[in-house]
Image 1 (cartoon, rainbow, N blue to C red):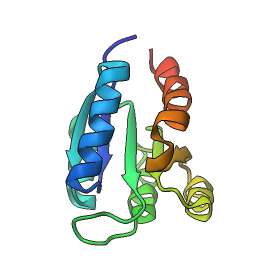
Image 2 (cartoon, rainbow, N blue to C red):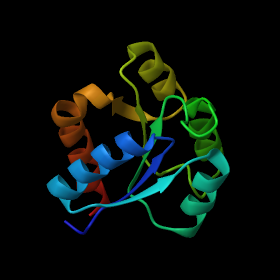
Image 3 (cartoon, helix red, strand yellow):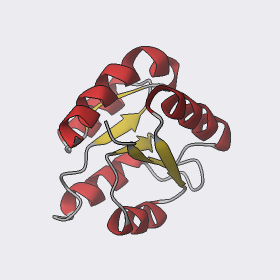
Length: 126
């Protein structure tokens, strides 16, 4: 498997660090952070990412992550990129999936649920 590239959007610095360390350790992934919707869209348009992890509520400005999911899925050049919501709330996960996200995970589930979900995405990217 090539080194996966992951865009992590809207995490607080502690959570971004925890998620990044875990994904680097398990996959050797390159994790790029973005704080806001505009920054995330610029990064996505400029780079090749295997998956986007979006916090339920963006830490920097309180924007609902669902707005970014909708924006990504509305752009033909970005719509095929898998997007996962980072949230422990089942209703938020269901809403994200209803607008095109793949099943995500909560921070408390990071070690249990993230690995199988990301492995499936990375297997398709190879």
